[in-house]
Length: 118
Figure 1 (cartoon, one colour):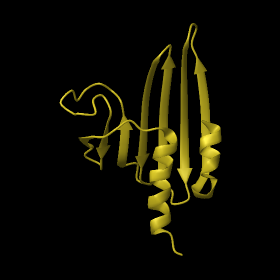
Figure 2 (cartoon, rainbow, N blue to C red):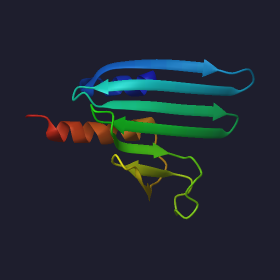
Figure 3 (cartoon, rainbow, N blue to C red):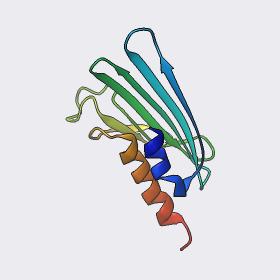
Figure 4 (tube, one colour):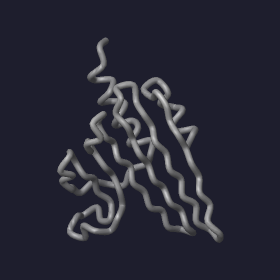
């Protein structure tokens, strides 16, 4: 995860990273990233055997959700089930394919770079 984060160093102000290893085979990785525009990304990745759960929540400086991507299985009607994303402070859900942390960071970088003075 750190290698992926460091690839996007140009848009990152700070980050914190924590790895939790449970007895057995479960590993949880959490990260909080603050960007140069003062928005934040809070990440959660959990691996146990062949199961992988994730949540990536990007918030504005006022802690309102901009986007949240996850694979919590609660929208079985979506064709990308269990993968989806939530948009805006009201977190409207929509079908969306699986993403990685690199995908999310690229999405954020594109938006930060588009709004930064040239």
